[in-house]
Length: 622
Image (spheres, rainbow, N blue to C red):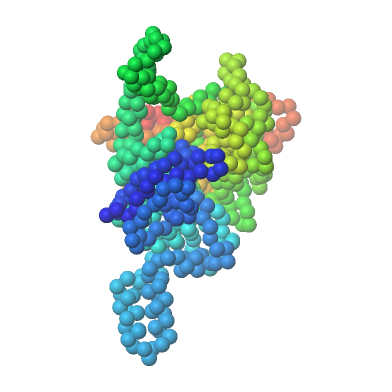
């Protein structure tokens, strides 16, 4: 059953063409993802379909009675309402039934009206609506129902708007970046919800696992043309690659044909026959096709990073608390060159505090943070770029210099650098305030990376970036030789980039997990299934595994995780051991300090011996 048809819709803002004429339809049961580069008009198209904006040309024709809910990237909510009042003000049909029932209760004499309202409650199953919305709000971490919207953070507002949209029970649900501001637990819940529910969806999202598991059709907007792929995200990638390869083959053949026609044109006399004129017209068409270029700028981030010293950052027994809530408790870690660390954990467990401690924005309550002399931070925050009125894109980059140094003594101009970041020459002279949200994030990312950091912190870098830019960023980060910390709810991004995780459990507990996010989820699930089989300590676990080694080939999943963890811990202990040994060379040490250092050094040596034995036993099982 067709719900709506988009017919020849186009949109411009002044001279800027956002959407060229587009046509497609949406049928009941489809779960469609719209994929396009930033600035291609994805959000504009969603707004037009949701009737939040109007097209310049064309129209959207809806099936009679079709109900649509729309979740914007930045939802507009009434700040005076409470969380519960916002839900009750939504367009859910059950709310009207509940209101009629409550009105009937006020007039018990009118038995007919009461009976009618009661039957409507039964028909719409409205008795469970209160339980339903409270459960959903709880899943989205919005337990205080009397909290006013004005007091909510941006992420909480997005979650409230999401809950309201889901509860409206629409025929078509339109979602613009629904996973932004959701932690991984909530994303996985939403993913499972959409898989289970028979809903019709149209969404824009950069979360590729979400696309793969939820959507059954991909619509790509590329160079003003729409391409439809009836399948999952992986199916789309496969078929898109075939399409592009075919286009390149056709373009190559057309170019060869163009060369032949050009030679013919040059040989022709001035007087043209009718047949010649027809061929000339064909030549013009061939020339136009031959000169087409796919606007697939591949970003080559060959930026020359500043020299890395032997010391990056050392954290020794770092503790931090706010209002009697402990966020870090005696945390130790020695950051190394080529560290690829992902940070995960629920909101409020101390992730932002941890980053502020690293960057010296906050001081620890106790413990010590030692930073290397050659340390240079690059910090991409969720705040984004600060827009200056009247500033152009090129001027933002020129604040950092006219030229950027590259490897092997080369350099690149600010204009060339922007082209590599998918800003063509015309776009470079646009005012920054004209850029889309994703384009601003891309520009901001550019300003962070060109400063040659050797310690890069990315706080939710994937929000609002299109998939093309994400692939470019991932390619760069895989080659980045410095230390990298990523806070992200994009599971695909984390799996591709990081090799171990800091898991913030709350109450100051931070676990160092050796593996990416999928490894972590698999480990958590195995632990939940076999709670009594979790190893109590390194020595006992290794002993048990050694006893069973004759029955095994290779290492189990838990053994592999422990093996990686031991490698990392041994490296850290060896680094601390070297640091302490060097401290004994300091002339100003007091006898008390020497005693403390000696005790700690013995502790490290004992622990190092134990962990090395455990690692050796596991390595033999390999």
